[in-house]
Each structure stands twice: as C-alpha cells, then as structure tokens.
Length: 297
Ligand SMILES: [Zn+2]
Image (cartoon, rainbow, N blue to C red):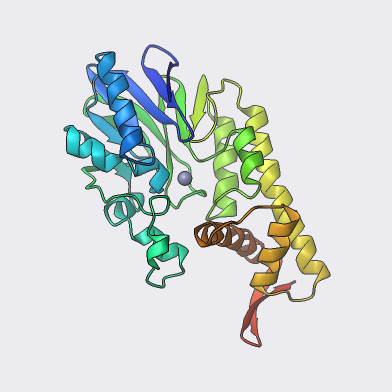
C-alpha cells in the first residue's frame, strides 16, 4: 500500500482497493476504509507517521471491500462516519448484501464472508448530492449509481474520488464482466464523469489519472459489448432461460467462477444486463416449464 500525494490537500493509498485521503483545515477525511482491519491499520500507521489527522470517514458505497476496515477505525479513533442514504442502511446492517445476492433467501454461512459482508458500522451522518459542507470543509458530492444503488463520488480541489463508477483499464480487462446492479445508471454515471471539469480522478480500483477519456470510453464500450452479445444471443436462440443466458455470457467472456460467492456476484451483474434489455423493450421475461425465459421482442 503506497501513500501518494496528488496535490496540497488530496492523497490516496494505492492498493487493490484504493483509499482516498483529504487534509484540510486541520481535519483528515478518509474516503473508504479498505477490506478489513489490516488495511485500516496500515492507513492509520502511515497517517500517524506523517502527523496527519484522521477525523472523518466518508464511505462511497456499501461494498465490503470499501467499508470492511471502518469498524476498526471507529473502534480505535474518534472517526465520524458518513455515507449516502441506502448505502448507509447496508453499512449498518451488512447482512443485507449476502441477503440480496442470495435473492432474499437467508444466506448460507459460506456467503457471510469478509468479501460479501463487512463488520457493521454505525453511520453518523448522511452525505447528500451537490455542494456539501462537512464540519466546515466543502466537497462536491456526485451521485454515481449503477455499480451500487446509491454510490457517490467525492470531489475536492478538482480531484475526484470516483469509487467504482469506473474501473481502471487493467482491472476492467481482468473482471471481463464488471459487477453492476443497473446498466442504464452505470452508463449515465460514466457519461456524467465525462462532463466534469476536474484535474484528475482516483477510481476504487485502478490508478490516479488526469486524462480520463480513454478509460471512461473503455468502460462504456465494455458495457455496450456485453449488451450487444446478449441481445444477439436472445435473437438467435428463441427463448433461452436465465441460466442458459448466464452460461452463454460467462463462456463468451471466458470468466472464471471458482466458488459460489463469485457465482452470486456474476449472476447479479448478468441479471442487470438482462433487465436492461427488458427495460429497453428489446426482451421480456416469461416463465416456461418452471424456467425463467427471456423472449426477444
Ligand atoms: Zn464496489
């Protein structure tokens, strides 16, 4: 985990899951907390060694790899935790993530792991979109849903902490089918990023970049290609079942699914692409012989 300074106020800890940091007016704002206590400990150690304050934690969205370390921070320091609405409800009741991934069924123990369920954290305040004054320091909060229901990006001093609204090109190629819950919102958020006048951006997974254009375009192309593949599959295959469509896309993109937790994540993402085609009026859901089938229109 490398601590990198972007400008006089903004920094980030570069890791598999980046953690942002803003130092302003004697206050220290952490943006996300990493997967677990070990990551949070490294962050605190680094800040302490440079005499940098830690007073607030803003959580961009309720995925365990972004808030799993928050419990440790709150236990060890007097850190005020802020998060957007709905995401805050999941952060306070983290079993909701394995519940929704397991389609509402009470989740098996194997799904209640650190990647799908972080330790519960009490949220002290709700972050709202727009110009946002947090204990005297001004931020611009951007609503960037799609990867998660109510994800936010945080802009300060021209630097955007973009959460998982886009992935670095390398990470995008690794995932092949990125985790999202809503295609239209994901695309709208990506289009919105293009319009921001910022000096640079730190994604949740990837490097700080000043020129985002190519990375954003790669993300847009990736979603569009997946939608196109699925649409072609529906047109050529009558009324395939959800399972057949899932299998087709996983084979087509050569994704590796080694365990059931990973299966649940891909099922949710692929469900989002199918739902998008239904919302677009290009397909509809039917039930045939006890199977959920997708009929192209
Ligand atoms: Zn995420």
